[in-house]
Length: 327
Image 1 (cartoon, rainbow, N blue to C red):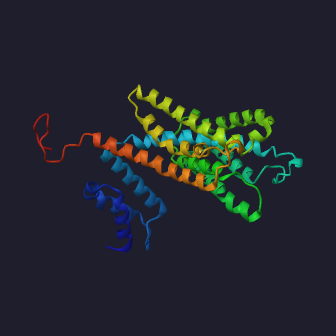
Image 2 (cartoon, rainbow, N blue to C red):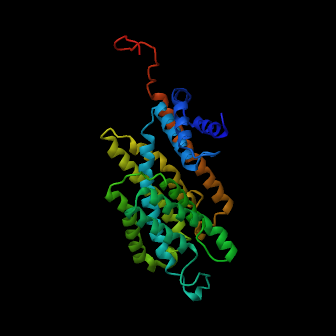
Image 3 (cartoon, one colour):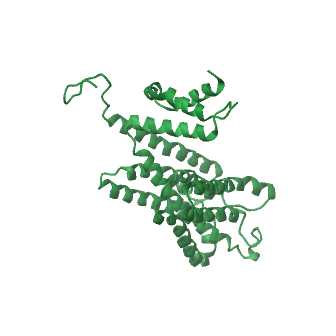
């Protein structure tokens, strides 16, 4: 056994034990046949493919094969939400506060956030016109630009959007990477349409002045409201699909608990307006940490409960409970 084969076998641990025993040698042999001469490490694409395949087999063994379609549905809803937020914040960036306020800004924009929001809007366009593989690259670029805002703003001593605005955008984008490979045209257009509608509504409301900025009511009321609407849409979709015996909506709703929770962090931490007293960074951090733990924990608990309710398949060699024949 050479190093490459040994490393493929380690990646094969992503699969259930029984599946590895039955088909492990065949899977590893296929990857070895496709390897180039003198290759010592599995390619990133092969590693990702093995991990994805192992996850699918484990979910199939647990009887929750509808989880992945549900996550993909949640990814589409997350991208629609992220695009709408980018439309709102991008419009806000075009209207910096008056000079007499003495508030620092970046040229004709409110902050450096205009770069990230432009990237998210571009990603919505790419989703509408390009295959999902290309769209994921556009989402990844928008994610990286969003993550780079805090250190770049600190280095340039320039204003940026608050972390409680950037964090839910990152979480929505990470979920959006699970975008399905094939989408009907109407679904591919949904993020772009939501961004355009949100931008038009934001332009109409821009006259509200400070209320429409990143701080104050924008964080205390707007973001939690968006999170609540996301859950309401997910719940309605889950009920509608359940009427036809489709459980994808239920899994999508459970998956959306995490991004919706991050959208509600300012509200959960007690609000940020001066009337309620400023919430400290520590309180926001603790609340965000609680959301980061609670959302995935609920999803994992749901998977465990669902898998225990699944009927265990008949083992090979055992008599069939219907006809008495042995497999």
